Length: 387
Image 1: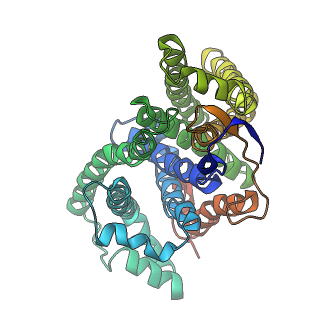
Image 2: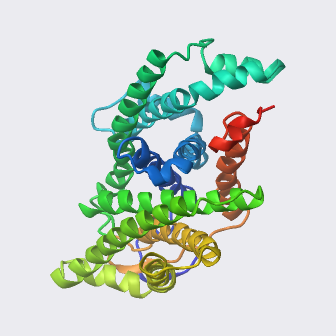
């Protein structure tokens, strides 16, 4: 760890490290993936039907581990329930706990209602443990009458409709937590919740594109090109707005020249120059914008599209991760003296080190694989018994 100029003793160490940067990253993927499903179930974007159910399972897999980075960061993680058992109206984290729980309930219910006809059929096709699992998931109800299915459809639309604002609040609230830290000038901006929410949409859609194409390729199944092109178009739209807001936040402060502008500018041109201007803005924002323009505005061959679309998705997932890093870690590099900076070097095998981050990020994908053994990802998979 290095220091430059004058740094207060309590600003020498970066207390919110990589796990705190990973926490908003995972919650963002959850919110963005849910929006993909809602575009079909609420807004009737028929082209997204092939991935509408998969995106819900994708969101559930990441939601299950959204709070794990916070628990790993805490010195006494078993105390985490105190914020909900003894809540305070002024506690931002207690509010997040309730929002997270309610959103999880809505997401699970929507998945069960959407999959109910499929689960009932699979219950009759399977034996042993899988039959028991499907019996529990269907609450032992085999009613597939038209009246029952119509009621399910109304419930699904209701859950998807209320899930949209809940998903937005879930991640916008994360941005609010950082934006509410008045003592940190790089965080204290009303645009922070908006930027976090828009980047969440980008990371969720990008993750769906990348994982969808990889799974279909691994299984040697055809990729629905209309679905892939439509999803990429939405990704381009959300990313243009997201990148515009990120740059507006930077350039508006540069133009206004507020009292802390010089220290923030020195931070971005100093310790954060490579991670912000070179990687986040240059390589992982401008280049994907050019590629998205090529994919959306020209007639690209399907074979090329199947390569470039997931590549752009991977780059934008990295872009959002760099954005989280620059906000969470970068915001703590500037001392309260506004005259000095510290440097953060992540450890490999620390409790919040690089290996721990890779393990946490792999857990949702492992859960997604387990869910695939119970819930068919694609409509054509329903023709085959699951187990």
